[in-house]
Image 1 (cartoon, rainbow, N blue to C red):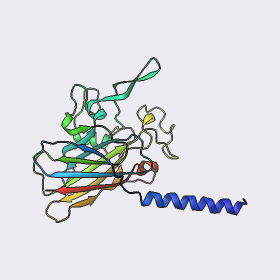
Image 2 (image 1 turned 120 degrees about the vertical axis):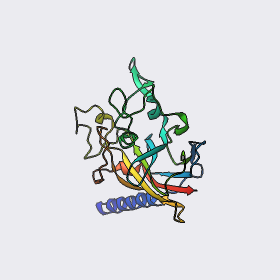
Image 3 (image 1 turned 135 degrees about the vertical axis):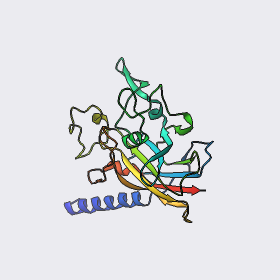
Image 4 (image 1 turned 90 degrees about the vertical axis):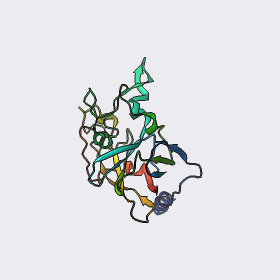
Length: 247
């Protein structure tokens, strides 16, 4: 094949993968999660349609008032909630389950929650974990989360979703960008934060979550950074996130 044929084939492949990503539909058998079964508030369903770059991410879902004040957690990965990971420690050159602190994982959620541990991190601990009612295994593909608020919420509030994936380096977030920051070394691109504003007074029942920024790259603060131009694959962990409300 000549040079022009190679170029033509390359263009066809690019177009194909772009189209496939755009039209990706939820699978027929998404994983189901349910949290806060005893909640007395409104019913919320979150439908997560995974993107092409998903690979064992960590996630948290919570609600805030319209001023950004934290109200409650709806779901957080159990490993974060208990500070205990399947690959937590290295013993005899092998990974073993054990306690691990990862402040870079979900820093926007953890700082919003506002509980500071003795080691200075805004993360749950083994001694002060998040109870099982709000936790679950980490989905690795499409999933549907069914949950409830603890009590009746304000008529208008926000639902936030933070997601992060380790080792997802790119040309900007390189593995030597912050060589002295041990938490950045396993974080790479920072966590992405999505949000939807809910209005219970409207007839709207379905809301699409939008990316509103990213967290601090190593979890040193709880700021939200709205510039997403340096992120690449981090924005392709999720393809679409839909919120459905049942009052």
